[in-house]
Image 1 (tube, rainbow, N blue to C red):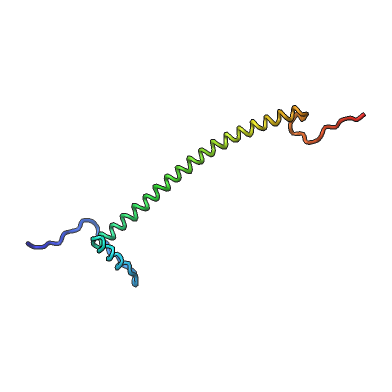
Image 2 (image 1 turned 120 degrees about the vertical axis):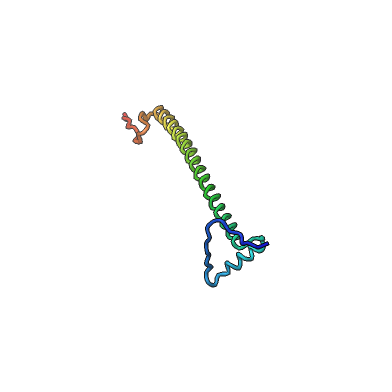
Length: 115
């Protein structure tokens, strides 16, 4: 039986490792430990890296939605507090009117005639 080299589907790419880098050695060691070829190890690591980035981006999208929900909740709470402040201002004005400050804004004491 004649051994034929299996043809690989897909595009081929050469990778140049920087001079002095031990990256190739580390990848070869990882490939050996994982029972993969160097190419399979590189492909696996690229896939995992891209999947991790996509997962983090998905997490960011969830975070943005959560911030939007918080913003909406805070907006609702702000309207509730504004309405409460308005009610309190009305109550203060009523009290001030009862004690003789008709507009509730007068800060000058009323002048009384003596005599």
